Image 1 (cartoon, helix red, strand yellow):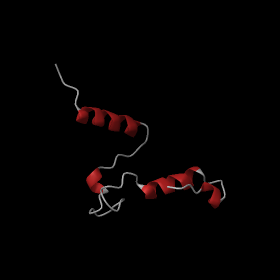
Image 2 (cartoon, one colour):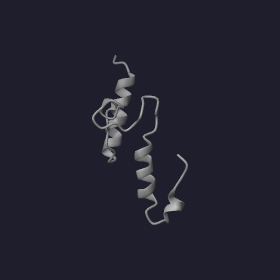
Image 3 (cartoon, one colour):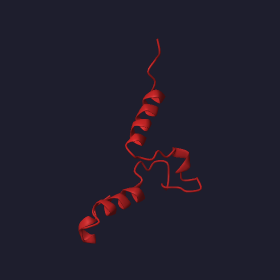
Amino acid sequence: MSRLTESAIEEFAIRQLERLGYTHLRGPDIAPDSERPERGNYAEVFLSGRLEQAVRRINSRRPDPESRIPI
């Protein structure tokens, strides 16, 4: 009998999201000490730069002040 592990669930979820068009980025590739960091330190949970870009893209038809949200 096989065991269901955290890594198996994670891999399953990643595959499902990639099928929906999402891109999977490994943590070390976007870490603060990587070549292309997307966070200032390891405690930052949200990638605020990506969130801001998504908000602008989703609200591209709205005037800029209306598309700003507190992050």
